[in-house]
Amino acid sequence: MKISANKLGGKRHHKPALAAVALGVLISFQAGAARADDTAAEIRLLKARLKHLEERVAEQGRKEKETQAQIRHAAAQPGPAPAPYAYPIGIGLPPQPPIGNTLAERLAKIKGYPYVGSSSLYLGGMSITPGGFLELASVTRDHFIGADIATPFGNIPFANVPSSHTAEFRFSARRSRLSFLTLGDVDPATHLAGFGEFDFLGAAQTANSNESDSFNPRVRQLYMTVDQDDFGAHLLAGQAWTLATMNVVGIVPRTENTPLVIDDQYVPGFTWARQPQIRVTKDFDQTLWFALSAENPQTTFGGTTPTLVDSGAIISTVGAAGATFPQTSVVGGSLFNNANAISLNQMPDIIGKVAWDPIIGDRTIHVEAFGIFRDFHDRVIYPLGAPPFPFGTGIPNHNLEVAGGGGGGSIHVPIVPKVLEVRFSGMTGRGIGRYGASQLPDVTFNSDGSLAPIQETMLLAGLTWHPIPGLDFYAYAGEEVQGAKFGFSIPKGNTAFGWGNPAFVNTGCQIEDFGTGTGAFACTGNTQLVRQITGGFWDDIYKGPFGRLMGGLQYSFTQKFGFVGIGGAPERNENTFFTSLRYYPF
Image (tube, rainbow, N blue to C red; front, side, top):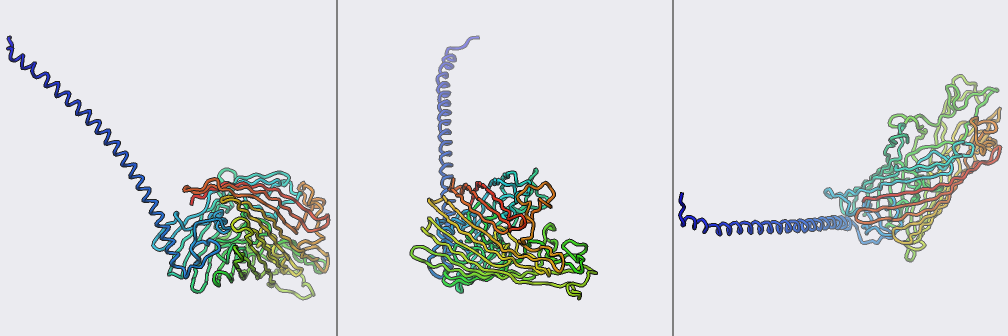
């Protein structure tokens, strides 16, 4: 077959064209790939810029919310009256500036109390602010007590308790707290607020430290407040610190002047309780304050009950067959743990308080005084068929009632404002034991079965030093001392009873008991005095946009002394170290 030259030439003529087309396609593909790479880089750059813009918008939104909250609260105030301290918002007081270095503010930060700010949520006209902290603490004691992060000062064991000759160490996360603060303004002069605070120091009967601790949450504080600026009137209803607890300023919730210690039982000599109450307060120019509260009653008991004797026969003792003399409490019923007794109280504790915040030079002094009225009640029960007592005529079962109470006061002085503060507080009275950190008894018993309030005095002094922002040193010294209240059963036997009776046997209090608890090892050991010196510090390890990390260390030296009895007056010392690592997310 012959192929013409023209055909061959045509074929050769198209080869360069095809090569050119292929080269163009390759160049176009490479150019397209380059453009694709440039487009991807541009997209990444745009995404980065968009993310930065979103962050700026979110930050601006947070600032606008905080500014709006400050404007709303500022508009609700009757005037620009300056405040010596930064008060928590929501109680009808001047707007709160950013958290600074005053004692009230530092106390609130250490406690984890919420402040209105960037972490607040807003629903309509209300703000909801979370608070609290997460903590891992440790406690080391040289004498075993068997207690968690709160030391039962009044129950420090004498040397007769075998386990007290060993040391004790515990980790605890149970003091971690969750809290919230809700605020709302009904009108420019009327403010509503609610506050709740919870930790994990509850211990159900199933709780243990064997595998899964199962400790349960508990209510520390849960109350509402109503504040009316025009009348300087304030109402608190719910569970809160007792009115008898010292404040830093005025009579203002969440400014209680609690010691800065890690120990959740605080310091001997510190007057405190957290209990349901209703409280009314009146302020005059936010300088002079008056308050009255009715608070939940409860009675603590101590000592030995009398033995009643008639014609040589024992009529009744506590625990005798079918009879209790007297009856002071009952086992808890509905919504109470049946392992705990409820005392026979019939009226609330009544507490009145006055506080004054004078400005002297460049500092504000806080002074307060308070009084407590208490009512104690029991039921005297005679066993069925008992011989007539005491004078040949039968005495039916009956109620007996006695009054108690006391008074005290405190003062807080900034020696160097925002740097060095000193405080003193004290309380004295009859039947006030449960208001002290050592939890000494309120009452013991008289010969007729009635309750006898025990005399007690508690004192506390403290010093707080802020050398630099974020670092706090503290030192406290306190004591609680009780008087003796006792008698001897009549007409026969002369059996010793009461609290601090010199006829009680203490011969074995300083000797390790081998299980008898009698004879040479007998130890009545009624407590007369508990005292302590303690000190420590808190330091901000980190503080920034991601919260705050704080570390603390505390050492305490505690002494417990018993009343003098047969064999002398027992005593015991307790050395305790605490550490704490806390994270405040809000």
